[in-house]
Image (cartoon, rainbow, N blue to C red; front, side, top):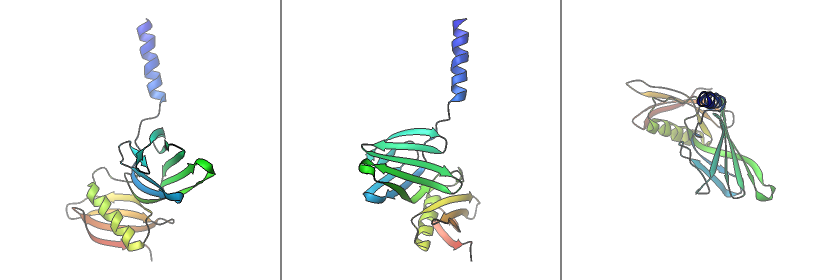
Length: 171
């Protein structure tokens, strides 16, 4: 009898806890010289040192080390990072690259995603570029990128980490 009640309690608890999801892979810089990097598998480094990461839900995390706290959030517009440091310094971090956002495709080779992010960042002079959507095909993969604060849409045709074309979808 006790075993059945305990099993039911554990099962109920498992259903109420949020699913563990690692913060996506990204690189960011914050004012006051703070750098943040996530490997996409659960490790976040702040200024090169491994931070303690707490998963708040499948789209939000907090990374802390020493007197620095980085809040990480993912939504339809991409990845957002906010920092707070000892002494009251706080602000918004600039994401220079990110992968594995909600719109990213699991079938897309990582080298194609990274090549398109780099090409779009170089073409637009924005360090803040995020995935909007992806598609795979035999000839070329298609990666749609949002560039800059307004998330201007760009498309890349890419295969084996080499960008064949990167073009703006706007005027």
